[in-house]
Image (cartoon, rainbow, N blue to C red; front, side):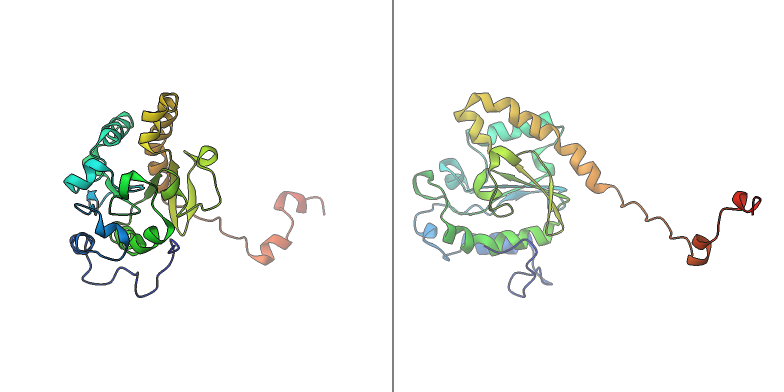
Length: 224
């Protein structure tokens, strides 16, 4: 796994890199076994200047056919979640930790996530989102490897200079309808989190000169 703050030459956003270049490389990628079973790789899509970047786990059946992220049932609910928070799909950037569909929609394996991590790192470096929201436990584990999503979902944290908000995967509510309200509540917090991140840091108070700190207040000098 590449740490979020890794800026080694092989992963740094260098001059001449672009989201289109990353997408082109993803579509031709053969770095892991998933390339042998995919139909179309799914680099991701959205606003290149997005303040919010959503990172899912991996393409599913429909995504593999169309080459676009979150276009199946989970994608329909994701659009609903975004709309409920006053956000539009075209205003955010959506991608996954692995860009090719794992067979039978199984969980992505650690070496597959590692093989794709360079692409994701470059996307993050190019977009520079104010907030990153992970969708599901496998994307969450990139930033919080020892946490449980049931405990930390919806809670923003600083990781490698980024604000990361772990969220439940939209598909979770499709399998467990009771989670629908939880996902809506978590998404509803995103605009406020993005607004808070946008605020300039408070200016530090100026330290009083040492000689002034040693003097007594003027009103007390009346009684000396």
